Length: 285
Image (cartoon, rainbow, N blue to C red):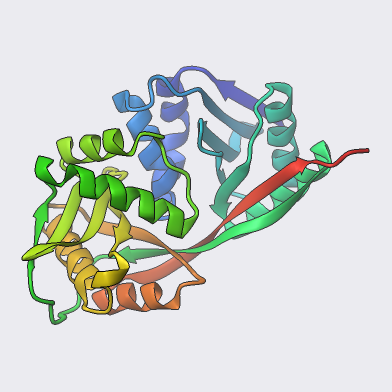
């Protein structure tokens, strides 16, 4: 078995996309990030792109765009050889990673091998469930309506993006929240529920050929328990399906049973679990 690392995103994509697209909904996170790289969205970000192979067969794939941690895919169970090769190459390449995300089994195996190799601790940062939607259920909507976020909403959207990352303990792609909000509004990926004033937010993210993700769902505490988030996610998901996407996906934090139930009520169905592991500082000898 050997590892092949790439500097050219196009060549890397040509090699791995046929494999990832076999399960497009499950691999939407990596596919979405890879397609964003091809569009030039991460032009200034340092990247790590590699796969392991044996006898011409790709076994595992890893993709990282700093400052985010790697996304991991494996076609094999308990593929410790691939995980060791990836860990060794990341260390050799002097990439310091703080976390890793991927499907449950391979991600834990990588975390164990990487932490043992560099002599550090690790812990489960988030246990997530990936949901898929192909048809919405009929639900009663709250008062108000969905609309795309507009320039006048920039400061509020910036604040809510910050709140979302604080509540979900996830990394922001940009330290400048206003720039992040302006970008989302400009590209038409930010949506709000308006009931006399805007009361909830969500984002359309990581479009692939057949799927698109819904994320960044936030309703400030003073507007919760009124069905705004449910109405917003339902309305956006329905619109995305009607626009031609085969399905929508979203991730939930399994420690939040309320959000999991809300999405199931809309029609989202669980398809697999993902884990995010965080690495501690190197243990002193």
